[in-house]
Image 1 (cartoon, rainbow, N blue to C red):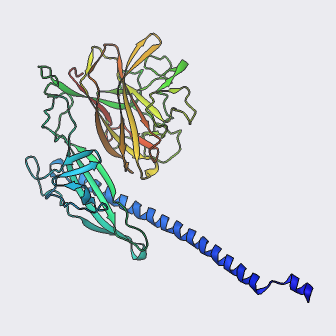
Image 2: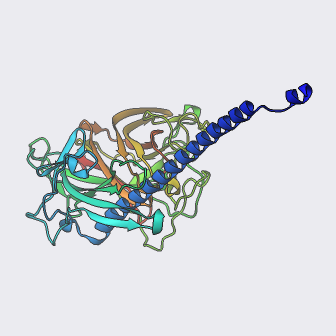
Length: 436
């Protein structure tokens, strides 16, 4: 009897074992439940982002510039989870430091405008359905153009869409999903036309466009494309420095010039970095890398932990026949999307250099750099445009201007840029008193 009792479990031991198992199972189920809620929340956010992007696409695709305005003043709210919390009177708080006035009825506006009242939506069916409300705002953006009066602050329009989700089960209320896009006026200053002088004198200021090409800058004009290819070495340094006069075409930046790419909608779109993995429609893929704005990398640039051929790309103008004046404003207009169509933040850095070459000695002077961030980068190819201010300067005859573009590691995804195609004419625009 004694031996048998030593081999058997007592009732107390069995109860303790059952209790421990129950605690473990409960904890495991809690983990599964938490993971499930996280997945559902992410899916709901994706739906909200898609609704916001679709709304902006509809506005841009179906309405002219003059029709994009608000038919009434949006309603404000004291609830921080309501988009109206950013509304104060006739102004909208774009960021914590930037407030812009609403575009309301007035001179230059046509049609019935956009009703700012929230509209409801529902995606899916049954228990998986996601519903919520869509809010639309249109504001004036001040580009601070050279020679512009301080009172003239209606240069471009910004369309901002917020999407809120209705409560679902145990999921807590969440802040709205926001997407915005700046829309330039198609009737605004065109290349070669003049605006008032920034200095107040008689010299006029023009907007000079340089279109981005997939052509080595050892050529003085754009070359017809023949197919996809690996990424070009456009910003290497050291013994194999990329500059237009380099006898080795392998180490030359790409060209940017004044002629818009020719062709039509049937013109093939090629990949300019087909050595990179990932899905994209064509053009140049750039990997996110680093938090600074480097303008070069060590050749051959294959170290993926350092600035490299896949994270930095450069374009150069032809050498100027005479002095070229920089009059303070730079605008970059790019067709772009996230690699694989993934949603998330995008952060790009653009730097403008002037380049002097004497023999094999290359001297670069930074004229200005700007970091542009968009919380929801386009998931299909769309145009983005942003402007920034640089000091006025003179680029000497014989020198060139170089644009360097990179994607920061704070981006959620790698990005790609489409250019050198008649349907996707990406360009750099400079304010100047000496247009070409």
